[in-house]
Image (cartoon, one colour):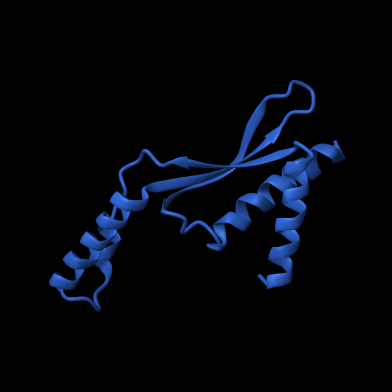
Amino acid sequence: MKPHEIEKINDVFKQAQADGLLRFRIVPDETFYDDSYIDTWDYLSESEKIKAKKEIRDRIEEDGVWGIIVDRKCSECGQWTEVDSVYGFIGNEYENSGYDIDVKKAGLKAIVNLKGT
């Protein structure tokens, strides 16, 4: 996705938030972080894999593991409903990950679909 497209999505999403239609939440991920994917990194030696896992555990200890959620507000009842979410981000690595834009796009699509019905 091109930078100007990302900027447009962020701008439209911010307006939808200001209008009270959508919200973006960052919540603790309460699921155990599985670092076993490091075992598939064949280009690392066993000692390098151990070191990489320790670095990840240290980052988790320092920054936590988080999920991002986009909710839409029901115009009739005022309740919030989850539209999309992604979990497993260490610290703020969700920022500019592409997943942040994906959940925002899902939220924007949800309110457009509501207006069309």
